[in-house]
Length: 247
Image 1 (cartoon, rainbow, N blue to C red):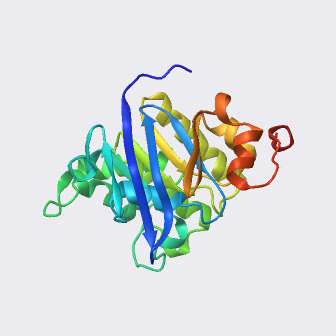
Image 2 (image 1 turned 180 degrees about the horizontal axis):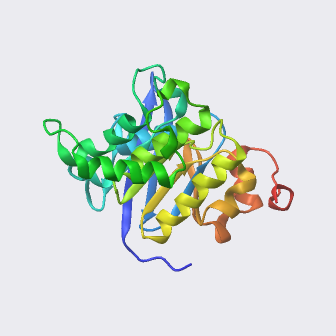
């Protein structure tokens, strides 16, 4: 699959530390526009931290991140974020529709309230993820898979150019996972850039066309067909992996 040469996210010399212990070390990474990319690596490899550093949620001790050549603060409206399900307060009293409408605030600003146009877009996003019938349901009453679909709908309504997703398949059933994968592939087909923190190595070749191996340092990045191999798996996880066994 040929990609253009435009870089969606450029990361240079990025180092992040917690209590003086490096979590990411000297990361150089160029993510091309229009790829569906998995970030894979063992627990503690810094995968979620990398996403949060791009978003400015975590401040690095060194290095820079640009989005389409500009700092994230100037380009934040181009980026949608789906956080880990465990980081969300699901007991907050709000409906599925209200959560999705939150995705329109970035373009409206905090003074204006969502109108009929935004509500229509939110309902369309809910329909796309198969959750329209639950629009008035409190989020606390939804299953884990349904909650994840709601947050995906919130990202979709932003109509972003880049989607950053932190373990979107965690705790979801097979039907929800397949629905999410289909939406991610549609986003890529329409030219969007999608970056996913992912754990299931078996599904990488089926779901993604680009992959970054990470274990505090960047091990490798590139197209799945070129670099998803025994050597990079072994370097990343520290034990002998066989792609043939995964498949």
